[in-house]
Length: 257
Image 1 (cartoon, rainbow, N blue to C red):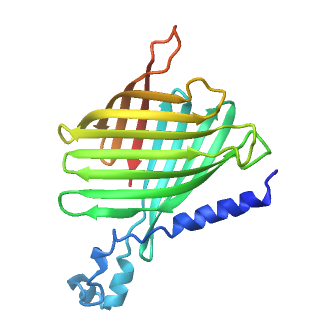
Image 2: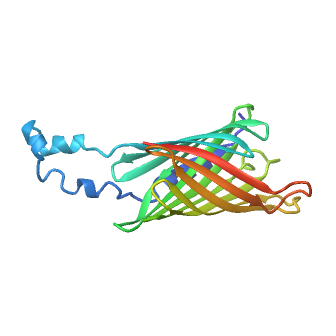
Image 3: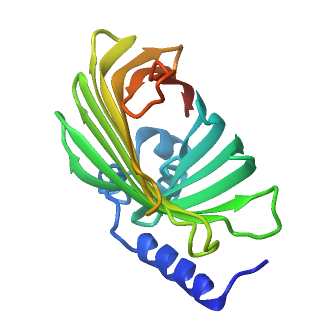
């Protein structure tokens, strides 16, 4: 693999930085009184408060998603791991084919609760990832610093994702990109939520006449059984050829646990 020493150093510093951004308090409230008293169930079993607390460790939550759009089929799986006072987030991302490449990506970061009360919650999730092209022996393929935002306020839900693709640190003849996706939905009932969505891609390449790609449309989330969501996006691409309609979209299925 053709990797220079400064590339190893850069990756190491990025991962260290993202891992110490800030502590998570998501699970703090559940354990404030642990050790002070024992539940009736624990008393019946002769358990000490310390033993009960050990059995009530916060669970590892996870999700699985399949995406289909103009770039192909994507498989994603992620989890949040409570470790001490941190909520460590990780994602694995696999693309069946993209620009003639079969790629895989691993992301690592933290989940930071900015606001958490009865009426609203806001979570930020900064991460950094590294990608590999499994059709090539010249790896890694790219570095992916990114951030997610999740806002839940009753019937209103807001999602934002910004991800940078740094390929030139590994391949000088490649290009770097900045991608953004945002949508805001309103729950009509327990099954259907709908709202606007906008996406943009900026390509850092001097030779491109129009480096900014922008599409906007409507997002529809449908409850698809317990802990399942079917997401449908219908959009319009502002940059299109003369013989193209500009219509675009995406379908994804997400399973939570």
